Amino acid sequence: MKRTIEEDVTRVIAGEFTCFMSRSDDPQLHDHVVIWNRARSKSDGKWRTLDSRAIFRATTTLSEVHQGVLSDYLTEALGVGWESRKRRHSPRPRYEILGVSEALMDEFSSRAIQISSHKNELVNDFLKAHGRQPTVVEEIHLRQVATLATRDTKSHLSLSVLSAKWSIRAEKYIDGSQYAWITNLRNRNDLPLLRADDLAQKILSNAARSVVESVSKYNSTFTRMN
Image 1: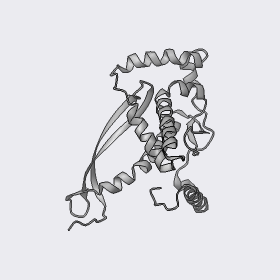
Image 2: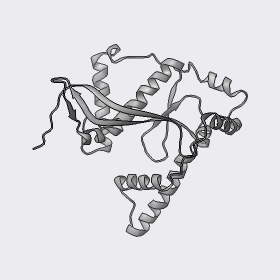
Image 3: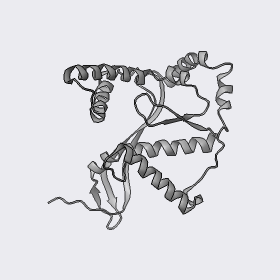
Image 4: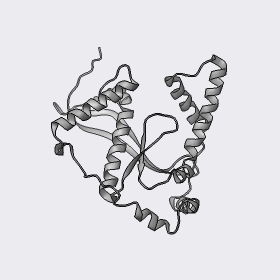
């Protein structure tokens, strides 16, 4: 009989692959991480099988933590600021580097536009077939279908070739030197860099309360991962 236990681990093995572009050859620096479903137990040093279902449920959380930590590192290293922007397909805001225009981001978001356009076609087909709009879960599924249906084969162009192409495409959105424009994005953060230890317990409690209220708006039931 299989059983699940919880205990501390000392070793986890994962393979990380860095990509610099999207399927449409737009700049999109991102990482893929493959986690081996084995971990070394702290109690006796044995390697045991991880509960892959729990890892799968945590993928969104891990992705959001990754984005947050990456943002912190960019601000710490370059001083970039961040601002809230609206999303095309979600009421939740996204955060972008302060000083980068929507027009410039749209130029390099052809993959997102391609997926969104095909997803809208699928939504229209769903409406005709069922006589109603898809639910949130159904629309997420349709977006996943659109993502796979519009996936191009990779071009395998070198980063130097792609960088030259990107520079040409960016010219009409940036006045003057692109290097000077990038330099001007630095040191725009006017907020102090904080750690959790810098905040009083009352502030942390208020932040936790705000998180729970926010999650409650989108989920009738939720877990720590949400």
